[in-house]
Image (cartoon, rainbow, N blue to C red):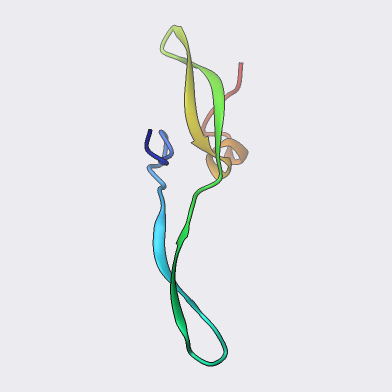
Length: 62
């Protein structure tokens, strides 16, 4: 099960956490995904959507 938005494709991003002493530690940022029941065509379907797509109105909840 991939951590990816079904609408915009937003997924996990990796990078470094850098302290004031410039110590770099690897870390991962995960998207804020929500399972939403919506109409896809004429069928009800549960999809994983990031909250930005949900807030902007790209997906309509049932």
